[in-house]
Image (cartoon, rainbow, N blue to C red):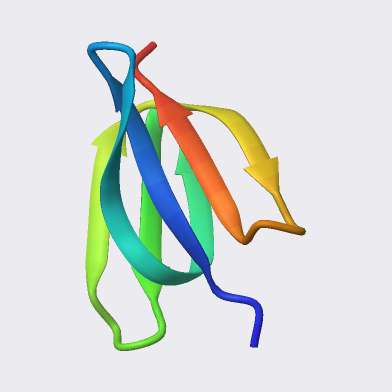
Length: 62
């Protein structure tokens, strides 16, 4: 499986937002994430980095 963990940069540190993310949608300035279990998070952010090797998504506030 290739689910990723999503982090938001807060005060220069990565804060875990959601684990096992398997869908990510951009809707304007909002990033919506859905994980393997159907849990959802949506926040105003932009993608800073995605690492497919590390299964990691890093977001930052716009």
